[in-house]
Amino acid sequence: MPFDSKFQISRIPSLHIGEGKVKEIYNWLNLFKIKKVLVITGKKSIDVNGKFDLIEKYITKDNTKFERVICEGEPTASYADELIRKFHGAGFEGVISIGGGSVIDLGKALSAMIYLGNSVMDHIEIIGKGFPYKGVKLPFLVIPTTSGTGGEATKNAVLGKFDKNNGYKMSIRDEKLIPDSVIVDGDLLTTLPKKITIYSGFDSFTQLLESFLSKSSNEFTDAIVWSGLKNFVPNFLSACGKSANDPKVREYIGYASFCSGIGLTNADLGIVHGLANNIGSKFSIPHGIVCSSLMGSAQKTNFEALINRDNNNYALKKMSKVGRLFHSSKEFEDSDYINILTEKIEEWTELLDIPLLSNYGIKDKDIENLVDKANIRENPIHLTKSEIGSLIRNRI
View 1 (cartoon, helix red, strand yellow):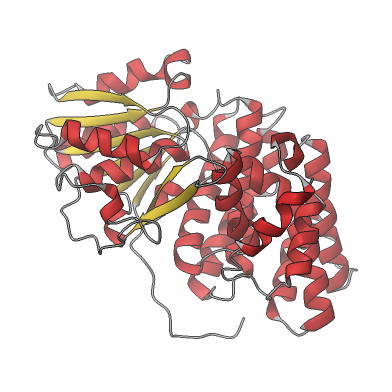
View 2 (tube, rainbow, N blue to C red):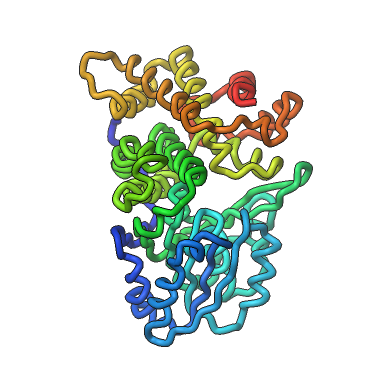
């Protein structure tokens, strides 16, 4: 890719990765001199596997007080506001999110808004007032228990309302919302259920590939995202199957997720994510499932559009490079490697039994509206409405 020096990079959280790194909670609390912390978790998994007891030990080692909040499902703006009203002025000095993307998004919103005390709708883009965030964010630590959204490295907190007619998924977006630190501990990832491993992993892969092919990508993002892809591709199927209980394999996928967050923050994404938020808010489909279902169709559509209308586009070279991760032979042409990439994504889709969107109530009659609301974002080529419609129809 020709070097273009005109880009900027958002702040990147400090990263602690490896088995047993959960103990860094204690050092993080001491670093920020935190004696009262709000802890956000999901409903079940962290308790079922007994890991929360260990986490609690590190939190309370120096008599730090904590209160726990449960995040069930994807967070709504109204639930975030309810918690802000409850905890504003309660003396919390930091926030820790332990969980998947929804837990991380809620933690971001609370770390930013508890000190201010006002509604998240004052800062949510498009659907809210969109005022610039000028508050004082509480120190924020993320400990992912899934590997997919990349939210541990992004600057937006996604909140929504889930309704077919008036639903939305929008963000508070500001560099201050980027977490201060991230702990990726394989021991906390090994008990992740297979389906969530698949869907969150596919989301991570989608973010890696879309930011790699993005029109706004640059040398820095390419280097980070390529590092993520190199760790993700050879380990994904193992993490979904025979090596699901191997902390090291889980850490490879966790690291790839972290890289995907850096990629999406600094290079943006493409058509899959340009469709996913609207589809998810209108039909209550988990984000990872939307990405999993659409990724193969999107890759094929982008490849065909580039070949037909812009066959000198540098994204084709990048597709070929990713294809080589699946097949190391040096005897093929670039187009062969792109076909390998496209076929492998479709193979994963079949092998891992990714559901059709029709399983969640999407019908042919919904396609026109979804196309009209689609956001091309930084997709490597502008897709026509017909192409986007076919992309969706292939997964109904």
